[in-house]
Length: 101
Image (cartoon, rainbow, N blue to C red; front, side, top):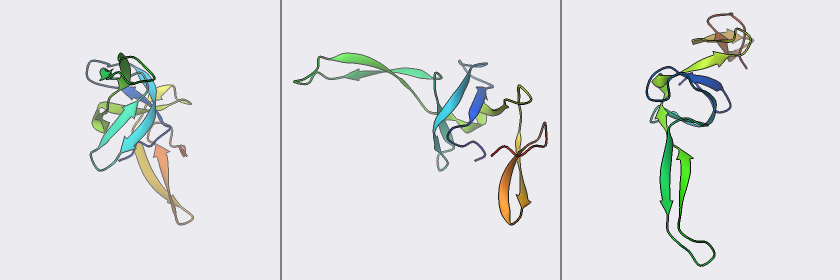
């Protein structure tokens, strides 16, 4: 999976198409990511002694294929490639050719 935690991504398909946000969590085994402000779901919490029952809005996971890395320098979504420099694997923007990390 080419998307990592902390990346800014653009949603390219689905009900939140066109929204930008930061990746909060990435799950490579299931190929899913959680993006801030995208795929908002309602979670009902039961009442406890210290707090009443409430409905909380949380971000749900979406498939990594539905988001695209957003390159802030090019100000556009771009695909990610890899290159090896000095024995280390680096992520590279396909649009600008610059190293992302």
